[in-house]
Image (cartoon, one colour):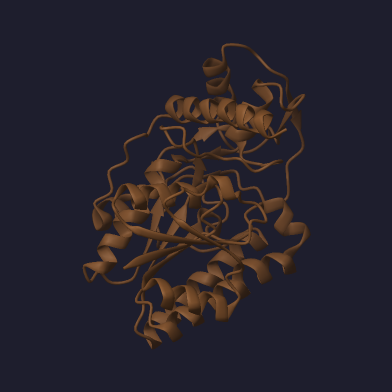
Length: 331
């Protein structure tokens, strides 16, 4: 059987492809390459360039490759952008996910793993948030993902499909073997931005808000290494194939770091200071979001291996240096 990874040429998706291949799985990737890269897809995987909302294409991929599971990463992920373009986010994240679920049901795919987000909780406070916490997205991005979770829930009640929705907290780092990493130009992820600034790819970086109700006034997030996240997906797939019921679970480390703490970690890794400027808050940013990940650990048997901010930052910085070399070779 084969696993279909949508968005497999992107940041998290490309790590997932390597994780599956390392585990001996057969993998086909569907990506329209709007933000992903053909070179980021492992050569052992089959790449199809196209859109998840193309019913005929997705149906052929499922039938031709005997797909028994879909891991769905394709979508838009920038919170401020979703505030400025809500309809675009509902189209790309919600409507297209609905079409993909419909195609999976029509083609008899029994297992579906969905890339959700901690943004479904909104501002959750300093205490680790559980899956049964109040769902109050503060951005169209968060709401677009929550609506997709609801569609999966209802589809699983009506059809022969079981799912796992993993609510990510802040994904960072890169493949420890240097095979892939966050490569999107103009990315907004804090650790990516800080590493680019340290290496001179950006003249300076901004901290958005210094008056939040947190210990140092800057936003706090739970940073999870992308390799640990990919491992959680692989374990979720194993659980579904073994007959596990549908599940919604957090993926994080259950402790947070502030923006300033992350910047200090990048300074340590780089060995020099760089230009950091204080700015105003951005719309849609919550003060603090930290995971309670007990459910994922219990149900998936998930034991994170890279739960260390300095390790995450060092992997991200190492990838940023590799990416510099890759880009210089292309130009």
